[in-house]
Image 1 (cartoon, rainbow, N blue to C red):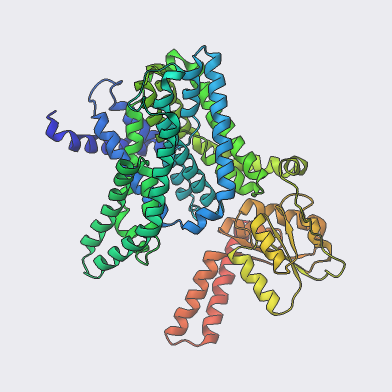
Image 2: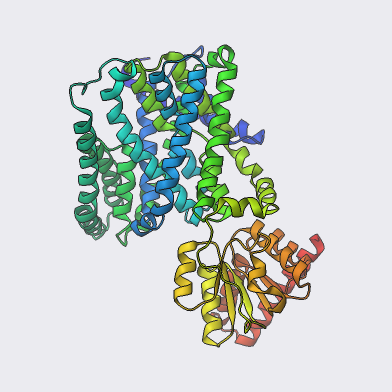
Length: 581
């Protein structure tokens, strides 16, 4: 095929085959990602027939990573990043260290040199940014506490990998490889220069970019040209990402993430996301196709035990370490398990580091093939970890002593005092629980809060609100709020599994306790109504009823007519759920 059409052919064949195989995978109840990866294998150099341009596919995939991370930055604030730093920094560092040691030990057992073993461990210690973000996006939970923790975790991993990419060429001769381009530069100088560049880039984006780029987007928006605005957003994302990589040795992904953070300071951020990011899904598909193209399927036949060993470390050890660290740092079981499951794969930085290691003769072709095989299998099988989460949660919730042994003990345990009776218990004090708490406080109603966010617990206690730290779904935590003496239990947590556990525990302690619970689906609402709770409120349904009430009044109907119609709609919903039960 002529070189002039290689780009068009790579895009057309890659997307076309990914669509066909992705559709088949979906029909077989497999993740569409499996189809995308197989499409890459089919057009890769290790399969017969047409071979796409691997170099072009990799560059197109990099655009997908840039757009993806730019979109994440648009919906992620600097405040969010700073709020999770005390958790994600130690958590990510411990997780990466554990995986590096495990990979090093495994490669040593295979008889590899210590330098190659360490390099192999580094290659499998980092998760795929694309897969982690997409897993939370598909569950509409990117903006949740777990989603913010996962994003912060990936930022820390990316920063560590930036340092590793600089250090590896300088350390290669010591580790048994050949000298890199910067071999003559002292290690301390190379490392110091890298950290300085990252610091300068971050400062430049914070003090200069945060002001100039939103101002520029606003000026473009005032022209009224939607095409020009879209172009300005894409130019900002790609320009900052490339500039960060060329001038400051920062990865494309990290540069694009900071670009999104800067644009998020503008009032135009939502319009930017709507106009410029629909392309990200198509380019993200090309990322998975490019991964498949690098894969040599023959490694599965030559070294099946080694491949399975690496997959087991990546999919079992890393999620377990991540969940352990989050529990240790006083995050909820829900957040710990969800973040842990999302990290159970390896991805783009692994390929970059493996490619560098091959050029430095620290890894051979089979070593890179092992990493690619583990990446493809772990990415394909990652959804199974989410499928197993309910059973893992149930297992943990029946072992309160295990969780208590993992967590750091609370320094100020709180129990209901002697005057606390006929009170309300609010489980979860986020936007929903906080609104309810303020309403009760304004009417001088007594209430206690059960919250698993340690920072929020300390803040509430400073405000004089009696707060129990912990997960109310675990035996013993709910008891601290004296449910036997309470009049009302408000379950405002967004996690349906946790809500079910809390309601069931409360029913065991006090069968006639009045309960109002937050739900997200009709099936959950029907389940809670079967438990005879006082009220199961489904957010979207109540939103629809409220808007229907306003629509009727706005169209000339009186409040009485609107109230009656809404009551009829609510009664229809109750009867439908009762019929399903």
